[in-house]
Picture 1 (cartoon, protein in one colour):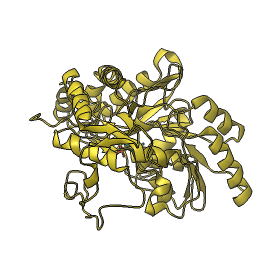
Picture 2 (cartoon, rainbow, N blue to C red):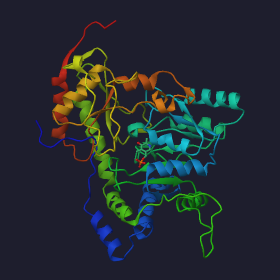
Picture 3 (spheres, rainbow, N blue to C red):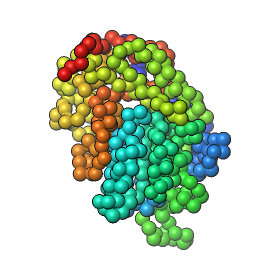
Length: 426
Ligand SMILES: *Cc1c(COP(=O)(O)O)cnc(C)c1O
């Protein structure tokens, strides 16, 4: 048993962060603008524009959620509009659509990348036009756990219908498709630097913009939309979404280790793949195509429904209480231990086995079209994301996860396996 808990993805500092922060204090730049903000944006621009494949501009913001929100505004999304968004995602991809009084239209995933199914996307576009008489205002594909979506096909379809793409690359910082960084294919690209993402600014995000004009518009909305008068003159509604110069200092320090982080996540994934390849019933989710180059923000696996895990007869017998009052701000205690759409008992049992061995694991994101809060939103589904949600699990992958940790995690998984039934359960 480990004394120190192995977490999914724990922030890892380079040591340079404090120098940038100290500089901000020394120069009295303790505000939501300043040299660190500008420097961090430059670093991010250099990173996303690598090999001069593109010439994007980046705006640093207070959160990835804010980046989604401002990208939608910049695409002209307003009350009564529709926005197509990948259903299999974290809620920050879709919630900002509702902030604007617009409606999310959920599109299911394909089995290979687990991301937006291009065929279903086109079905949804056509059907929304037929039903509402107007085009969706934007399309949001998501790089789930860092995995690239089918960029070529999604861009071909969205270009044909002339609908702007907001890439949600919050989990996909440094993932590449055909060698090009995710977030640089669409009109806008969303990044997140929350505490558990590829790099952190404690909390923060950024929006990758296509040109200076778009960047200026986003910057203006991020700083309360002020007009150039000596006094505060407002002709539009803005937001207080700019990144603080202190957080940006953390970001500059993090940019010195971003490539190490990405390499480490890929290394951990490769080790899981190697150690689990002969374990029947457990399948790692790897890059499906030669074009895909995932950062493997979180390493994910699926469990055969016939795999029997120790203790699975007790799965979901108790309401989870650990999360309530915890750091993640969960204050609503669940009234029942189960919902009508949840991971299989063996997945929950494996999570519990790992937890007892001091290893953090968690289910995949629950698809948005299965969330009660979105029960009235239109959805174009094929069963893929719901099916994956029932069989999938996220395993630790961050900079602190050592080779020995991966071996320990894999050994714990093997020890948790009761047996794989020979004949499928009917
Ligand atoms: C983390 C995340 C976001 C938003 O990021 P925050 O910085 O936490 O606001 C958006 N989309 C996805 C898919 C994410 O995982």
